[in-house]
Length: 73
Image (cartoon, rainbow, N blue to C red):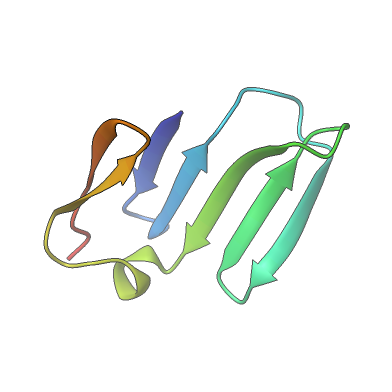
């Protein structure tokens, strides 16, 4: 998994797996999900990220790993 923030576009992309994107679905106004040809989720994009994500650095536990969530202010 990779997380990338594009400051100029104010968008964050969470790549779950590397695969050829077959379809992109709008989940909410500023949230898009990418799927491969088998329907597996490949990534999630959050637009206007600085308005939707925390302004203080936090972390979230995924399984046994604690992952930081960067601040976007």
